[in-house]
Amino acid sequence: MKVIEVRNLHKRYPNHVAVDDVSFEVSEGEIFGILGPNGAGKTTTVECVAGLRTPDRGTVRVTGIDPHQDRDALRRVLGAQLQSAALPDKIKVWEALDLYASFYPDPADWSELIERVGLGGNREERFAKLSGGQRQRLSIALALVGRPRVAVLDELTTGLDPQARRDTWQLVEQVRDSGVTIVLVTHFMEEAERLCDRVALIDAGRVVATDTPAGLIAQVGGAQRLRFRPTAPFSDDLLLALPEVSEVARTGEQVVVTGTGDLATSVMLTLARHEVVPADLRIEQATLDDAFLALTGRKLS
Amino acid sequence: MRKILFVETKLHLRQWSTIVFTLGLPLALLLVLGGIPDLSKADPALDGQRMIDTQLPAQMTLLSVLTLACTVLPAVLVTYREQGVLRRMSTTPVAPGRLLAAQLIINLAIGTVSVVLLVVVGNLVRGVAIPKQLPGFALVFLLGSAALLALGLVIASVAPSGKAAPGIGSVVMFPLMFVSGMWIPREFMPDALRAVSDYSVAGPFAQALRDTWAGHAPQPLHLVVMAVGLLVFGGIAIRLFRWE
Image (tube, rainbow over all chains, first blue to last red; front, side):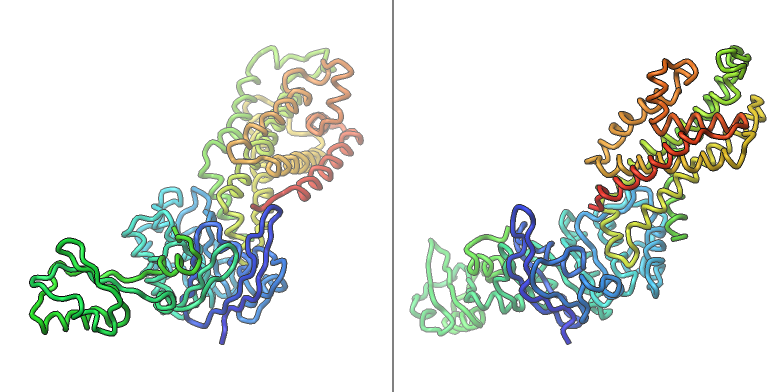
């Protein structure tokens, strides 16, 4: 069953069109990424999904609910962690959860939730004293306290240090494993690649492509590159004869082999058969960044 | 709603400056000024009343309510809007309007605590009379406070940022204090100024507090001006208030 269906969503603000034409579907239990550069319309899209904005055109359904028509029903199935949504400075962690739990008819046990997001030692801490990572964890906990079926997480790790970012990713995976469908908005391709089951690439208010991260990369050719320094001389033709290899280039001592498919294995086996060892071997794979570049002609970041 | 009230009350109490300026300052001023011998003498210009009988305690009540309405309430609401507290709340089944209602109730409650302190401590320490027309006094207090808090909502609606709110609040507050007779009692005002005062919401509020304190009925004009103030400011606030 589709948990979220968005069709031909269009939203314009007085001065510009934020979302031109966006359609996608999210299945139960997946982490669905909405990836695109700043200003692509990602936040406006999820604000329409979360019922905070009224689309000018198009339909949105969340577990069959029209967010605009039935806001109350929507708020019981969808939890949101939005950008620039803070808490009062002086509120304590447990008070915020206790308060937000009181908003829902059948809330989660918030003291267990505090432990789950790793804030067990910070119950009595005030919001203003929390680090960026701790605030995001609290945000996630608040989005989950109503026991939603869908959680929208917008720019979750922006401004976090690498360690806090990795911890937050782990938490998101745990949340998904508990059965919550997640819509993750991000402009970090690394984050989308690591976390998302499927990704919609958005640019200038339109969906450029929707697929798994690997699928998106494969769509643009999925080129891989091997760099190494051979310990013994060999002829380029040796590798060019392989079906996976499309190009062999040499700069000084270094050899760069470009190709697709199971490139690394097949090149290594061939070299080994001719008693050549590839020293300082590096494998470079295409990323979502490359996919975005190939699809839009622009860089993601 | 009870939980919102409870949590928001705790947050208010953690803001010690709110308590100092809305409860402590008016009470301290009443006690200190009430100790000045000249102000405890019958003054023929005040119809034989002493300054401390009604003028001083009524002005201190007004000071407390004006501080709440012009600085405390707008600062909290604008900061909530700026930081996205209201935005976050709008993703839950509870409408952010509840937060607004809770703020109004809490500010009214703080004002009430302040006036009770002024009356009780003023009576015990400086011999200020308990308001003689008590039900009328309570009605005037609630009506006047509601009208001024509605004005506070208007300030919160137009203030562009949490930093700008206290500035705008002061610009509104000091003229209101002046025309209500904080520095020149209304009896000493030239007629033109007193006429302005009569329509300034704060002026009628102060005068009606004094009238009921002394045991008289409040003037109908003053009640009407306060009621109109409540409706007009409330209407403007509802029109202009932005959640984000």
